[in-house]
Structure formats: C-alpha cells, structure tokens
Image (cartoon, rainbow, N blue to C red; front, top):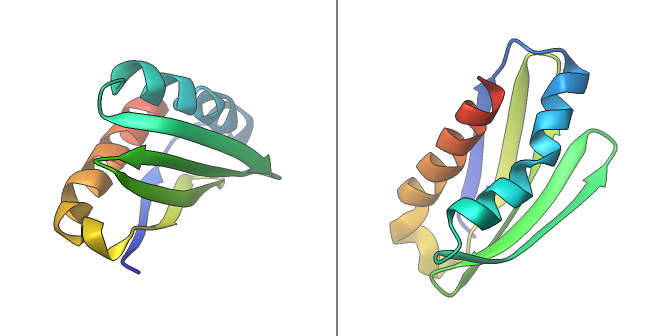
Length: 100
C-alpha cells in the first residue's frame, strides 16, 4: 500500500497542539462535506488515529502530537496512488492552518 509520511511543525505547547487537533475531524467534515465521508477518529495517548472515505477509497492514518511537530503516517489503497499528492497536500494544508 502507498504510504503517507510527513510532519507539520508548530510553535505551540503540546497541550494546545493536541486541543486544536481534537477539532480536526469536525473541521474536515464541515469543510469537505461533499468529498469526505465516514470520518472516524480515536485517541491513543497523544496520537490521533483517523480514517475517512474520499473518491470511493478509504484513507487511514495517525497524527502524533510531539513537542514541536505533528508527525503524520498513513496508508492509501493502491487505487489512490494517482491522488496521493492531492490527498497529502490537502491534509498537510489543513494541519498547517490548524497549527498556525
């Protein structure tokens, strides 16, 4: 499976970064209503585990809240390979706005 792996730096304390990330799923649901469905989230310590459907494909991953960055790791189905750049840039862009 194709992998997503990138980080988003932040200048927030870890508690504030996590607090903002907790609002992420709701923001995704609202902003991408017609493109993203079945948004799921759960927490394991300071790591957000997420999943959603877009373009008929499942995307899942984890966002670890670290002291100076968010570390994103995920996987895509092979059928999403041609959309990997778009999916990654959209997730990265949303997280950068969230941490600004």
